Structures are given as C-alpha cells and as structure tokens.
Image 1 (tube, one colour):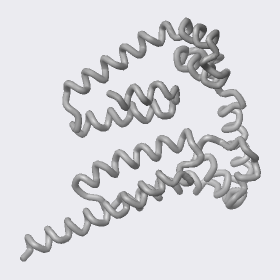
Image 2 (spheres, helix red, strand yellow; image 1 turned 30 degrees about the vertical axis):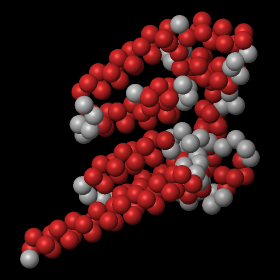
Image 3 (spheres, one colour; image 1 turned 90 degrees about the vertical axis):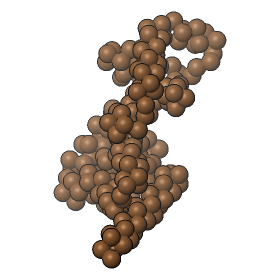
Image 4 (cartoon, one colour; image 1 turned 45 degrees about the vertical axis):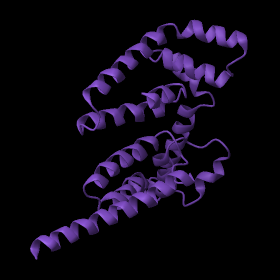
Length: 215
C-alpha cells in the first residue's frame, strides 16, 4: 500500500505502469492475499476519484508556488490522460519529439547503427528509452541486447529465485522504455550482479538435490 502511494506521488507514469504490472504478476503468482488485492483496488478507485478534482488542487498549488512548471504539466497530463494536448504539454522539450528524432536516426543506419558512443553526441537531451539508444548505436540487433542480457542473467534460476527473476526482469524491460540510464545506475547494476549470483546458486542447489536423489 505504501509503495502504491509513494509511486503515485512521484507523478511518474513509467513508475505507475511498472507498479500496475508488478501487482498483476503478484496476483497471478498468488504472492499477495486477496484482502490486499481489494485494498489496492480500493486505493486505485480513490486515486481516480481524486484525479477528478486534480485541476482544482493544481490551481491552488500553483498559486501557492508549490509546483514548478514541469511537475505541473505532468500532473495535468496524468489527471487528464485522455487529453492529447495535455500529454503533449507534459512532453516539454519533449520526450515524444526526441523519441521521434531518435527513431529517424535509427532509420538512417538500420542494419549496423551509428556505432558505440554515437548517442552521446546528442548533448544533454537523450531519448528516454534504452531500446532506442541501443538501436541507434547497433541497428536492429540493438532492440534485443537488453532482453538477451536479462535472459542470460536469469535463465539459470530455480525455485524462489525464479520468481524474483521474473519480477526483476519484467521491471527492467518495462522501465527501459522510460529511461536511458538503466545500465548506468549503480543500484541497478548491483541488482543484476546479486540476481546472477542468486540464479547460479539456485541452479547448484538443484543439481545437488538431483544428485542426492540419484544416490
């Protein structure tokens, strides 16, 4: 519950999408009790109702100087998610424009890309998408670099490690749609290392159990 509230107040649509998919996976795997599912659904309903008065709250916060323009535009986009003009206003310098430019750059060299490091020539505004970044530098094969990396790290996992791998892999693959620093953040890289060790350990444990049963 606290995670849901914390995610919502970040006003990050990428984080909200990851949370929704995480909850869906938890429900499928039956790792959370039904009572918590009802609580989360109730919270979502409350948030949707609160969204209807979002414009009023936004006006009050703006008058008090609590919000800057970037956060204000993001709140407008979230509370008016069916309004295309609100979404475009939130893009600002604009994620959609940068993504479009990045895709056009990819189309210029779709087979082999522009080479490693090319994306850094863009300046400070980079495409907020790991897949696009890799595709620009490596061509078509760039689209599968990250999924293959996640697969190699998690493919040997068994038991509880397999569930953790599923959640971690899903998070990374989805979050990479909204971030171009996934493989630069030390926290994420540390999680990759820990998961690789956990996966390897779970495989060794399985081999030991099989050997013991065969004896």
